Image 1 (tube, rainbow, N blue to C red):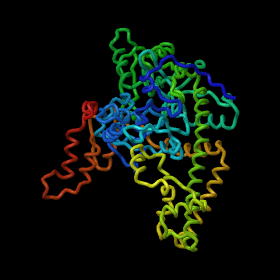
Image 2 (spheres, rainbow, N blue to C red):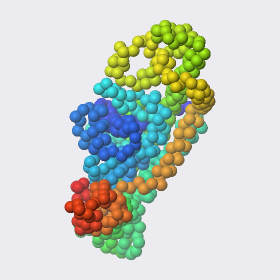
Image 3 (cartoon, helix red, strand yellow):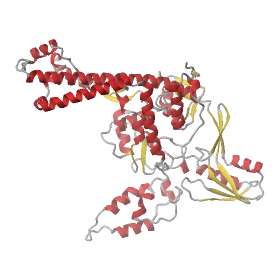
Image 4 (tube, rainbow, N blue to C red):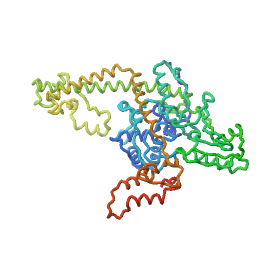
Length: 548
């Protein structure tokens, strides 16, 4: 039994279709176009963000301004606290920091990206054959939706608004989502799943449920000594720069309880030591001060709005209602995948079996291939050989199909896989290898046939968790400078051994020049002089903010 509590949201229109993510893949159209473009690359090499943006625009609408697309790419790669729990793209360079909410990211011409390994696990290639694609300018464009193995709309969440509407879907722990999917697969209804609490990767604060639709997320503040209050964590999406402004504003007030503050360098930019005027501050006063400084944030889950499978705007009651709808849709998609895989293998088996029989008939003198192709095609039809269309026919663009239709005789097109066989493929050795491949393919087909949808999905979930655990071991913060936590240090000790730790806007140029072999006769300064130059003239915090 399944009961999904949701209501049709009155807001509608093209603006919402472009801004609200789908319940299936958690993406909006611009994000889908970026992923489609980078998934079509032959190799997963690093590419400049601005170059990728131009490729996306060229496949979409020619002469489109790529500025907005660059921002979409950068946001898909951001992985600091409050951004993505799972970033689809790898950040190569300064993609912004938590200190400024990602707004301090470098321009697209300075940073690189590539597909994250976890993305291909989530967007399994086995589903590529069942995706429905748009067709634009005679070319295959992005799919209507992708089919992730877990609901990415609940993994990364969504926070967007428009004229008269807003949607906020908090992010949740991928492992808890997987656990609930397993409970649902092994159970019978939505009731088998357990409620989840919002979760932000690498966030060290405290979360407390107030009621079914409200949570309070608190930062960390503790008295380290008399008159000293230390803040080491903020609520998600409460950026350190905003807290710094709040502290300065509070100090300027005559009735302020704060005497002064110091911001100490840290990897995430959150380490404030506050000196209080009253050394004996009680708990109530400290709580009041924490609220004024934004250390407590009440989160509501009453605006869980997403597009359903039909593209209609729906407002869901809880995260489990969203998870239930995803489960039902994804279960159907797995059935479609299984059927597609079986049909593909059957088509390959038919082709290989007929090629094996065709070659044997020629070698045994049972078939005369010296006759006209038309008569030969008739004989093949009479002998039960299958007429097989091109495997890629379904993915061929309309223009190409029309162009090829007049070039190929319809009567012969289905037997091209036989007529085009090479002589080397008809030797006894080659035929023995083909017979072995046919047997192996039949075993694979039987295995897929016996595999249930639950087993197929469970295998994908296990693969996801393995890769997810690998990702958790990697540093997820791109702060620009490890030493100063992105605050803009005044002193740089630049050396070859530690050059990769410093600001990414200079990283690539410096590294290339350090690796270059300069001749003594060259007028270009030596490596030692080059390093000294950058020590003498360090990149300032102001330059970093201007992305210079």
